[in-house]
Image 1: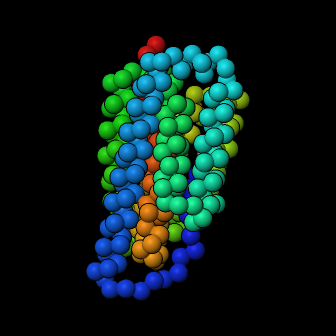
Image 2: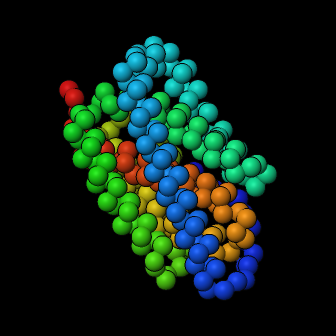
Length: 236
């Protein structure tokens, strides 16, 4: 779920000032996102050693509670970002990373540690390449962004169908589409964040960095999970 809450008027300024503002925002985006991923990984590993998986298996309401909390945080950030302080926005983002770490604990029991690490590095390389492309390309990715969002909604529907209809071929198709969609969204989101940084005043830099970090964090996590279906080795 990717949300950009700002209306984006064009602000003037010298090329140097513009470049500096964009650089500041993008550094903030990647630092927040990286720290968010580290928090998620540490929370997952800690939860795995403290028996949290058993709690999730015994009380399914815990998993659904985490899921609802994640949706709520995303909606709050998307709708009220400009009305809260930058510290509060960043705090909500890291709270999301903590909750997501708890929700992702099961993958540590499903896949081997070696295959998780391998998939992470594959994901990081792919994500990095597409983010660089989105940042440097002169092409307007708006049209492809619209198509990707349509594909994302279709992916969500297919995933819901997959819960009730278990078919290995269908699951492979969903996984392939998921990888393709989130590879594309990584480039598109990066370009959107860069444009926001160019068009908004410097006073909004921290807010843009937080919402940008959330969107790229979600792209990375989803890409990782779909790639894990291809490269992950089951513990069974």
